[in-house]
Length: 313
Image 1: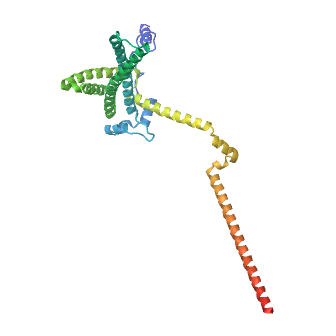
Image 2: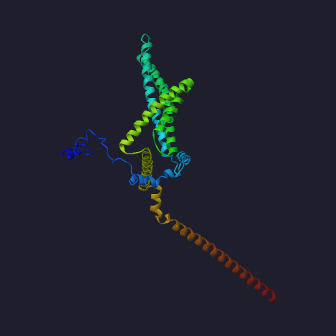
């Protein structure tokens, strides 16, 4: 009885484990080969059948629809988000500094009107916001693009995700970020980046392990979501195009009908018109020949009559 009560309170789904012990040992989140997710991945993705170089070539190859790979798309998104957050942070910080400096430097300045003071303040704040946004935006975008790019390239080449690519990406990115400070600065930046990269990688892998998924599955389902989204957009555009009526086509259908929209019907109509033209041309030619023969016969008869009258005389 005691063993049954402990099992009831501690196993997954029990009263205590549901709220206080979410990480009880179990195999519910283990990725197995017979799951639908893994089977679909093996069916639609080559996976380990390719070498690292071939996987990198596929990563940097655009498909027949002009779409980039999911890995390259994640690098683009990381760079864009880095630029966005860097621009917002730098712009807000610089604009606040410019606002405070303007108030301190112009306490005794005599402006012609309050409108002029507000205009100069707005100009200073806007200009410094743009400078700060650009300064922080491109730096953070370069940092995030380098980190995510190196981590993704190493992961794609190895064909799996682990802590090594996070450490390598953090170390190389940190060293590149301190390139202007010389070898010592690059070494210190690399060590700091190595530590931060390991921390970020450990958190990422821990979260994915807790949720029972892998980075390969995340990229796979990201690609599937992107493909399904584009297919839904194409289907909706097709339905919208079919539902809309063009005034020119509507007028044409009302006047000539829709039968000639078929290519076979158009060719048959063209052949019919061509035969009618050829028949009319042939009839005109025969009529002209008959008229010429009649004129010749009349001329011959007139000549014979003239000869006969001359002979009688």
